[in-house]
Image (cartoon, rainbow, N blue to C red; front, side, top):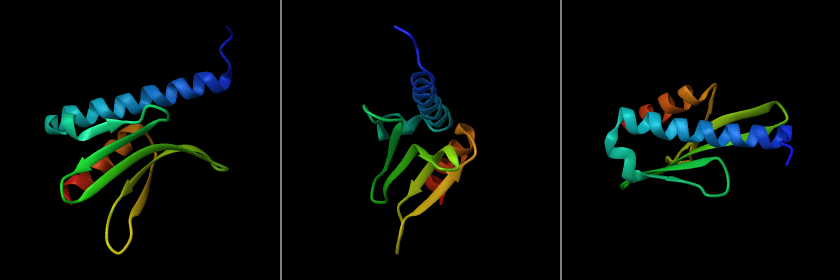
Length: 98
């Protein structure tokens, strides 16, 4: 089987999602049981008891492909664009602290 560019990009997205998950567990070991990687797309859910679930997802828009972090809140959720997987980790940790 030949590997297409789209297949390689997709595999890279999954690897980055795993890297984000591992970095979060390294920073906060208690998050290991609070995270649920999606089986069908590069998406990670981070449960916060009593405070909703953070979403970390790879999205594709006209401007390109990047990571976003969705933070539940009142009156509405906030969507943060991450420059890199490391930036996504920083945003998640800040949201957990805030």
